Image (cartoon, one colour):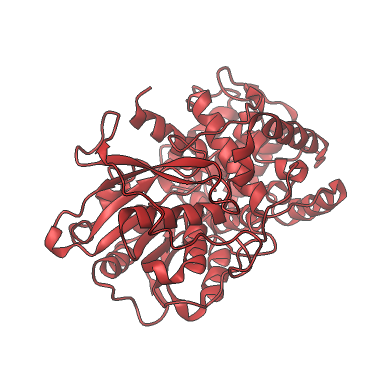
Length: 500
């Protein structure tokens, strides 16, 4: 498989983990990396491998410590890429394109999403992509999970039809044991704080005193942590589709947020699915779509439909629920979900969706799992999850208790090496948040918590739009123009704004 196809597959694979995503302030046992300007070698840029890339994109490798508590110990490689600023006379510096996930590849972002940036921004910055530690070309890891455990509806801990989580706890133990057995030493050092430290090594290797960044989804937490640990190294920071920074729960809060995110977003699907003239119309009114969906999911719980080539090889209630969650990320996917629902009502299924190649999926899932479990300690008590799942199922039936259930982190064999970063208002006022009002993966409620934590350091643009990824994707022209203007000129709105 070519490198470009491999990295596209890594991006798709990361959705299976979250679809998603350091010490308190900077005072825990593992230190923030030193300046690194004098210890990081200049980069040896060469043409990137693969087809379909912008011919200007070039690649290099930055060597970083596997364990920042022992910076002179074993080193690992972080793959980086760049497309230089298109107008050298207007060049301001480097713009880090921080991918989501966790488990998302970013090495080809300069050739991909970077080219969606307006010319004024591309003139201003070298566009910098990278694969996070452990992923793709950056010293890859794998847990060698069983094939069935790579199913998205298994990675997301959907309870059994009766609400039981016994099976989820069994999967958690099996998959966490696989990571302990096959992940090597590196898997213990894959975390958001270490990714932020890697970014500062990249900054130093680029020869930049400061860097700008555009972080998306989980990348907003990476960007916030970098801004917390290295505030004096930040220039213009854009955080797009924002994670809840709760330092007591971290990844647990991100996943828990899906229950509210789906509730925020589902009415838009219901409205679309009931429009007259829609060839995939599901109901006569929007109010009828929700009970119809819940009935179908319950029917599929009782009588799944065989689905050859899928993983699992059946369309059951949880696969339908997971498909809903995936689809709400992008309204362009609404027709596909409606067609699946219509087929299931007839007792049939469409062709099975194509999964990424298994080695690519194994890699992305291992990295995503490591971040989720190494960033914060998860409860191990089955009873605690049973109580949380029961409450969630009652209040948020569309997500059936999954967002508060036990992932493999409930049985993770390693303790976090440091406390989560606490995001604060200490630092320069140079952060712009952009957030869709209706986002299933990073809901507005969580984004507002990040906004509150950053205080005077940030302003926020809330966009009247539906879907995940606001800037240059599922947002609107007002939001796009606001962010582009900030990146190109440094001029931010003076107060939080709403883009209708």
